[in-house]
Image 1 (cartoon, rainbow, N blue to C red):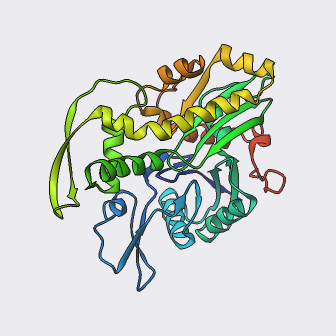
Image 2 (image 1 turned 120 degrees about the horizontal axis):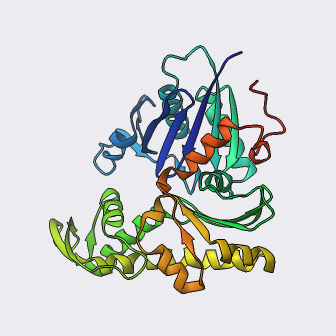
Length: 340
């Protein structure tokens, strides 16, 4: 039996889809638009995301994953079906073996739900890999060695600070607070300080283009939104230091999670981490200032791999191609069917 192998980094904000034959075939927002009357999915990815706040009442636009796990099962099934179909073009007769990342904090019930929805979407077999393992492998950390390794993964819905050694997790601090919480913090900042409303997409673009977690060059820029006092659209001039102020609460919680994780380590593993430094991956790693912040806060060296957004997917692909080497990292390896 010939298997068509697919890797899916299913994120709260963005998802990537890879096939062994064609490489990365999709990289788009984890969003779906569904017609309420028929239940039919009419848009996915970027097109669906642009409908947020603009769609009529007859169309529901949602992000099916919240905090890294499924919150909308119909939307998740539609999204997974879209991903699997996009990855299976020309190979519809082959059985589909899908490997998917799950957060460390995902419960057994949530993992079962993900497997069930992936199979309902067309997968014949589903393997799950906890995200810290994929992130560490993608960041080229020697997790198979008897040394302490630290990986900080700031995604869309979750931040996971994980120490690893000997192909196992020593300790993980999992926060259901990451990129999406930063977007919400930016929205709340404008609402509370200026009585000014901005949309979800606008908040995300401000975070990406103007955000920082350490002292950064301060410039003035304009934001388009709605003045709550007048009920009219308005342009507002703000400083980039104000965006840093808006992000400070989330950045502080992530910094505290890093400190808690290191404090849980044995002296030997902690010494390894401070000697070798940590790796930071995920979209949140792109915010300027993380190396300076962690160095000042706790004396920790930080390395940000090239293209941190795709680091988890690189780890998944490595596991996909060398399954025997990484068998211990597959969450359901004891019950999985052989691909040989």
